[in-house]
Length: 225
Image (cartoon, rainbow, N blue to C red):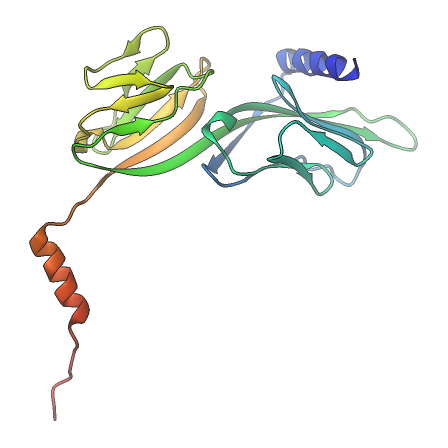
């Protein structure tokens, strides 16, 4: 009952808060810290929410719905082994106590963007596992272009006959150099959830490989005097 009340309160606070969002970014597979900056106050409770409560701490005892989410220090929250599904909004509520007076709780809102870097050979399949439940569209910024081209939009599908959707993946068939660049996944509010930088994997020719191998075995002898 307490958790349900707390969750409803956090949702109300999220919808009625005028506080600004703190942008965060992390590399897929890495870690990210949601810093609370407690200013050495006595903390009574900490709750991290994202549609549901992910972490709840009372009197230094924490319960987490996800083993990758935990508290560090007084109230900083760490998310380990980042995945694309971690992208989105988080709300951190910290309740303080003071011997003389009750202090207002601190509520922070974060927008987490997950980044990734992949390389694809020409002619192969480019698979982007980015069609999250909260994704609204995917746009492509080519390396040699100043504009963004929409590749997929919820409710409209893909924009190219070389694109298909399979198991939540956006598939681009027969990868070419023009497909390289940055792919941004945005939510319905235009916030960036995911950024994937795609480069073309260079395949050396037989002559180039022979040159590289020969160069590795070449020994330099200084001229005799």
